[in-house]
Length: 363
Image (tube, rainbow, N blue to C red; front, side, top):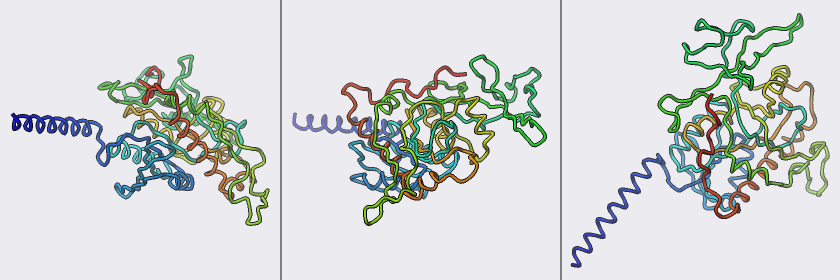
């Protein structure tokens, strides 16, 4: 009887091990399978602040990139620096999802402002992200008709982005010295295939953030500083030249946009605000959002505004933001406040909202 019991226990252990191994394989956690929040930082100075406060750190080098696991504000996390650009953001996000068991994704970094009502140092938390420079580049502002019918791009495997009226979003028109210049840049939707849309996939323009994470962000009131840590000298006196004029604010909601360009064109920034009501422009988050949606992982992003994209002339606030360390200090303060609030959210709140990263109705 004892021998049979031992055999039974060994069989049970073998089955448990096989089940665990299968589950791990399903999750594709090639390096580690502990459930974690993935933090992708686009700004090295802010990542350094987060890493300094992370406990039980362990460094993993994957394809030359440094992924650091540990515990931050009571949450198991893995932190990585993305590098600038949509391509780098896409690559490092997918690597993180392949090598670790990521329950949710956070992204943070610096961005240019699009809404002129925002000011230098504000930290924005958009409720959706889009890629406005995924375009069909037509000749002038004539409606595209490559497949024989105006607006039909199906023979090319493409779709135009449309507004609430069902009409294509207007192309960008550049005001030149001799009058308007029609660029013919029509915004497109992106095609995504994932577990819920395969095998045909679906079309999206916006990628909404996770509503549960957004609700926590709306509850935050972190103390955002006007003067960075480097503004205070050894004698304790604050150098006002290293302070922004107005205290930064946390602004939640609105659309963020990302593209493969560094935006220094005021006219295009005004176009994005007019047509999309965009709040912020940068080069990484929408790529992370696309990868998050394709993998079914909820996400949220924080962006500290460095300037008005395409602004003309010198702005003393921009110099103060970076020289004083204010950009990374305030952004890290928001990220840490979110992690603290996330850990303390009410009991019974789902760890992962069902369908939380689905961008509304496919179009």
